[in-house]
Amino acid sequence: MTAVVVHDPTLRDGQHAVRHQLGVAALRGYAEAADAAGVPVVEVGHGNGLGASSLQVGRAAVSDDLMLATVREALRRSKMGVFMLPGWGTSSDLRKAIAHGADVIRIGVHCTEPSLAERHLGWLAEQGADGHCVLMMSHMATAAQLAEHAAAAVGYGAKAVGLMDSAGYFLPQDVSERIGAITAAVDVPVIFHGHNNLGMAVANSVAAAQAGATIIDGCARGFGAGAGNTQLEVLVPVLERTGFSTGIDLYGLLDAAEFAERELMPAPPTTGTLSIVSGLAGVFSGFKHQVLDASSRAGVDPRDVFFELGRRQAIAGQEDLIVDVVAELGQREVAV
Image 1: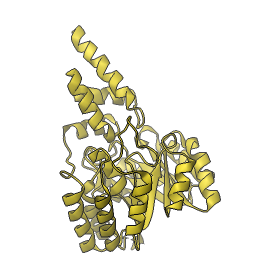
Image 2: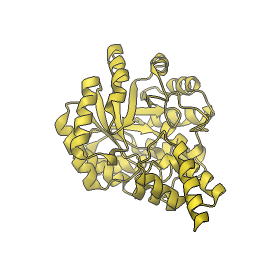
Image 3: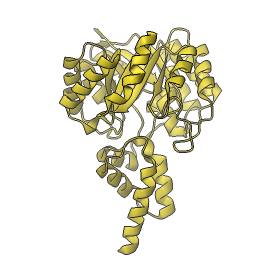
Image 4: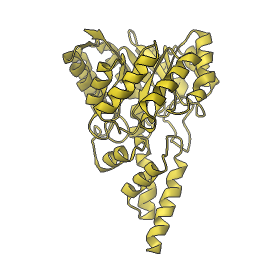
């Protein structure tokens, strides 16, 4: 069987679903459960990563320092992962994460802008840290472009590189083509991170593994923005049945998923109307709450907002654009 490393961002990406309000007890409890199951990497942080707690994208209930200290203490076997978007986080945040014992540090950039990670990846390489680079909103680039940008990130010092299907837009053949192109272009492990807007996250993740990705992400109960992420407790046994070894204990993983549903989320994510629309439009699922809030105040159909954001190729970090789109759509309706 081919070995695959499972990376679990439940305590980071899942924060989007609860407006970044996970508390210390929830962080510690899930980290202990994931560790007991033998999950290789447990990622923690604000949904938008280190340094991102803000009025624009949401204040976290717990500081970065306390989140990292809590999860680091809870992990005995699992590595601790963190995520940073340049612009939200800085080198100072990376230093603090390393001081707290972060083992895997991911730098996320828009899929066409790998150079934004150059400085941080170079610094992490100098520190001897395990720095990875993920190309976000990856449906916005061709397979050839993604391969070129992934190779550039490796040149900057990334020890692993890959894709985030941030909008849940891909179908399995899309993933196979893009991951295949990247694995042919680099000599480091390749990552795939799926979202479930169109109900394809597990199938896309299996397609990624079959195309050569050796780091696959999944969240307990799919905990994440909108329709959520790849459902971890489904992903692992499906990977095992298709010839990939994860080293994760199934019963322990199911126990962790039960804890997550009971303690982390008001309800597991579902593939609802807006999640489907955001997937079809190719818009980041994390916009859901802001779109709903702004559109309800203005009496605008949130589906129209998502499709207009998709037409404008909006990306994470451009939440202010939601207000502009809602205002313009509202004016159009008044004019009609």
